Length: 207
View (tube, rainbow, N blue to C red):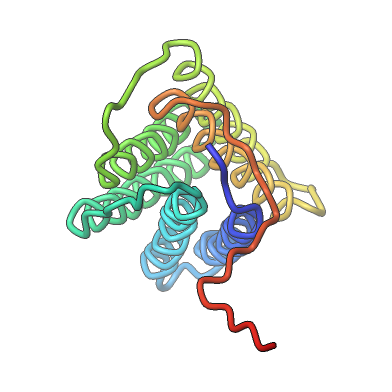
């Protein structure tokens, strides 16, 4: 399955930048005790956009002779799910840090599950038939989501890391991207390929 490399790279950049902005809000929640809920909501919304946009830009990058039809209602549900799971995972992460438990299983499980739901709902919104399942690729996709989420959250709660925000952003961007493209192989079939060909619909030849 061919993908437009430019759109793929743009989706990675969008994810990285939005995650950085999200982390700014989330970390500011700890400093600003007067309005912590506002910063949590802003950070969760930004993170939700990062996850959702990466998936849908990844699907828009698919180059197929058959046009895909996207269901707006399903896409909206996917975006709402991304917001919800981001909020719950950050709330649980903050609760864990405040209690000094350092048990990451709850926020990691929540965020990783949200990634899987967003991807699955996104694939369903494209009305792809038939949808196949491959246990090996599905397992690898799920493993990527939870592994890089765990690395990101573990880095986030550690102090003294000068490049913490960048490390967390890179980790989450990698996790979201790998889960999307590996999951695409598991549900749609075919190894993703990437090319740099830009197709222009309108061309004027003057002789």
